[in-house]
Amino acid sequence: MSAGIEARNVTLRYGDTTAVDSVSFNLKPGTIHGLIGRNGSGKTSLLSVIAAFRKATSGQVLFDGEPVWENPQAVRRICFIRGSGDTVAADWPSDRVSDAVSLAAAFRPEWDSEYAAKLIDRFRLNTRAHISKMSQGQRSALGVVLGLASRCPLTIFDETYLGMDAPSRYVFYEELLADYLAHPRTFVVSTHLIEEVASLFEEVAILDRGRLLLQEDVERLRSRGASITGPAGEVDQLAELLTVLSSRQLGPTRSVTVYGDLDPDLVRRARAVGLELGPISLQDLFVHLTEPERTTV
Amino acid sequence: MFDDRFPIYRQIADRIRNDVLNGTLKPEEQVMSTTQYAEFYRINPATAAKAFQQLVDEDVIYKRRGVGMFVRPGAPERLQAEFRQRFFSDVVDPMVEQARTVGIPIRDVIKRIEASANREPGGHDTREDDR
Image (tube, rainbow over all chains, first blue to last red; front, side, top):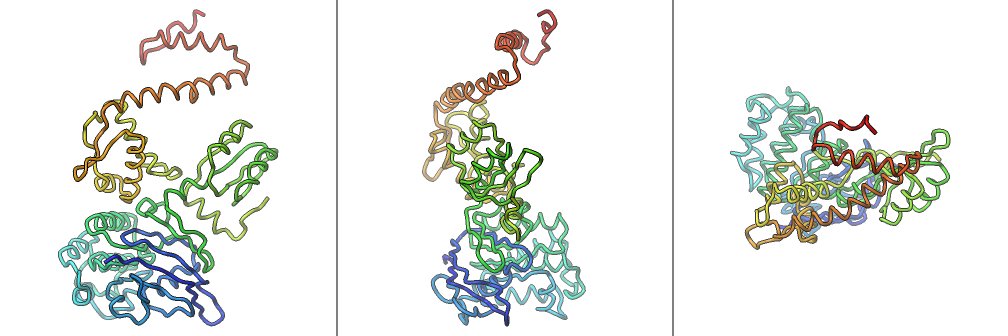
């Protein structure tokens, strides 16, 4: 039960629109992966192909080495909690929370009903409530309940926090981590609220305009962004050796955001000429990496 | 709890190193497990494991198979020695450099250091005015 995912040149087109553009990657089993991207970057499309909700236009996704498309065994082991709670409502238009829970219990071999009850309690959901009449945040919470209590070898949460208030989101993150520690399995969590969840991820993949921008160990990614500030000439000399993501100027002073490994030699060189080196947050790094205009020198 | 701009595993390694340095964690004492770290700090267990691996590489902690991580005997002394060495390059040298930049005579710097050193720890410098 390793639950590793391999995407091979996955492309998904809707008419003239290319939502996913020949994406290839491996998702290590037993790991929490973050999928990060702006609105419309293709996150949901890519996840839909991984979960076999949609057929790739070309390329394929392998789950434990087997193609996922039209593979009932694979699909039973994949739990895809789609987007906003609205899709939860669309799946069960006239049903109550208890109906959705019973269905999951029947369909998911690893279903843990005690745990589901505990989560329902923590999210303050009413099992008698009609799903279509619940708020978006409550539907998202129901999605979390179904996703976690299913204990699927591969669980995908696609922006499942939508509409949730901060306390509920924190319950989600806390339960996700605790249940992963107790029952290690593969998770893919798509989000653009990076700051809130990044510490839960082991790896992140950034999707931008349908393409895979990078896939990296989250801790390594954190160490790869930096800001360099100082006299424009000195800054430019150093920045030449790195990927510049953004640049701002105030009089003779220039501040650039760079992406790349700052080896100790480079750091020493920068300090020696009086440049100021600073770290940047993952959120900033993400914003700079996915900005339409990368450099404004 | 952590500065989002630096790798979390390094921040955890720093905290454990500090705990060993100041005696909060004693030689042969068991360090919390990666799972406990992950739960406590709400971080991915792989991140905690990375911090532990770094400290194992530095010989600050060691692994007892099937039991957990323990503080290596002699680690506090070794960390102290390293700290002492880095103190001059990390604190003293930059201070001298800064003093030079703004034109403070080194003599004045030394005088100030001596005055501070003679002060009661945490107390006020009563001799500041009789220079």
